[in-house]
Image 1 (tube, each protein chain N blue to C red):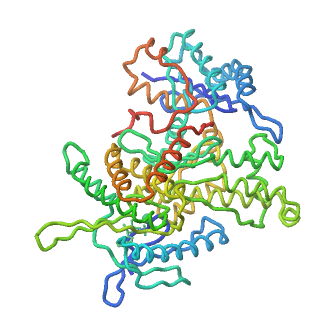
Image 2: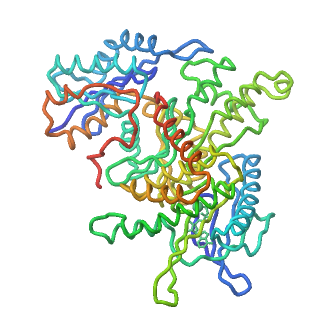
Image 3: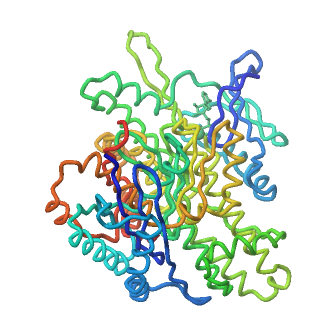
Length: 342
Length: 224
Ligand SMILES: Nc1ncnc2c1ncn2[C@@H]1O[C@H](COP(=O)(O)OP(=O)(O)O)[C@@H](O)[C@H]1O
Ligand SMILES: [Mg+2]
């Protein structure tokens, strides 16, 4: 019997709803809340955006897939981590359709969903994972039923560092600040030395951010360096650090596969650097494009599918409904991975 | 020279130095990063490693002897330590034991805690503490008993600092690498920390910082 799962995602500024049947993505529409240059997204407004677009995106997910609600076996939603208000707005919608359609409801860890989507799309078997997004920076490897965190930022996430810099120099947030920094960086060529802070498999970004913020406001310096030069220098420094800690984890774990997931993971320069590193040690890189790297509904459906067919296969409709809450903090290593070999 | 392995940032070769078997550690250029970044890091890490290895020996911490340094080629010739990494050791001990407990290696954890206390009391921060960067050497002594010695290696990220914050982060980095590499080793790690506490003269401020860094991680909001 094929299993068809619909997934709801809205832990940050992207609302996505996707349908996956036995590893095939049937549909995956998304709508992004884009703020004006210089402004970040706030919880209340983001939740409002998700509520306003919910029905449109849901209808599109079903239409694109050519399915009706009767074809759905299970509803999955993001339980956390993320921003409180947007998480709740999406969980409420998912819980409502689950009850309307009388389908089991499964709460999914967002980070795990990124990893499972990456594994589905790339067919990587047991990769060391670099998970990089607006809220997360982690180096992860699987062992004994957990995704274990080997390295992590000790302050802000890499995506957060990029987004905040974009705000300082008033770069457009459409489609995303990271994408526009990537484009502008291609025009830069004069390298400004920035702090470089690696602690074993951990990294720190706040020192770099405040240094480059000061640089951007410094008139004498900006007579020498263009905004494009700063974007270039920032990217090269941040990504060198990320590739370095990933390589350190690979050496430590004896891994020959590496996979990049999360929104920052669709940056082609980061992928290129990671690939060179991988080749230098005879390893292989797996990466995906913006459809699957950036938050989306299909990844939630895919992780929900794995949970539903293994650990939760005997759970009752009522138990699952009872468990359908959300949480802003939800660590990757808290989830028991019931669908992979121990 | 025989390539032994590609480490986290260097290539390790087996070689011979004046009749002694030794390890050659070469920091080769990393092509994924800009030359400006690469050259600066490579130079800095080589000199930090050499400095720290010498200071450790003065502080009575076991480390490989440096035979020769070639800064133009970024190569260090090191004494070869006969043994296995603490990581390999823990993994094989756990495989052998039926109850998969770590009891038999509590003494080793205590020894590591003592060494780190000495290191930090000498105001040295390792910067990359993992069980891959410690080598355990087992030798038979005269009474037919086995003795274990633990060597610290890989000092490329080391620096000197007397700040409790830096020492706390050093332990935090080890804690996470330790617990992720060796499932269910929370107790074993607390044995290590207890020994650190007993030996280090400034442990209380360091352990307070360790707790602070842990809390920062837990409180951090994670969006996207
Ligand atoms: N002096 C030594 N004696 C024996 N083995 C060593 C020695 N130095 C390094 N090794 C082995 O090589 C590996 C990598 O060396 P390391 O100095 O940690 O380089 P990297 O910075 O690349 O990790 C170690 O984990 C250890 O297994
Ligand atoms: Mg090493």
